[in-house]
Image (cartoon, rainbow, N blue to C red; front, side):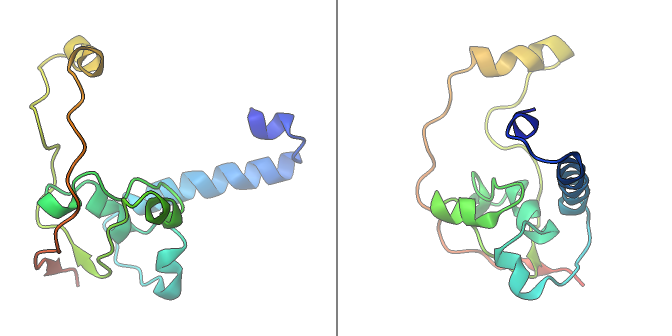
Length: 128
């Protein structure tokens, strides 16, 4: 809606929607597409998979959905080109059981304090 109110053409808005939707599917895929120098400019599957990692050094990292430069700016960027996490999961306090309980959880549980600075990366498996 805001992009429409700013006066962008319908074709530009449609192109943006297609780009965002396509990239959302791409970054959640299990593909090892080489992006070369673009790895620092656009979010890639490897970059985003570290966001979902249970590895200690990756917790609270790589939030950017499209532009890793935002993570670089806010010091949440974790660079590990070509390597993939060994473990995936939600870390921290376990979620309650049930649909309603899980939706109320963020409003009842106090947020945890910020994570300490990222330690050096541990060896990870290479994805073929």
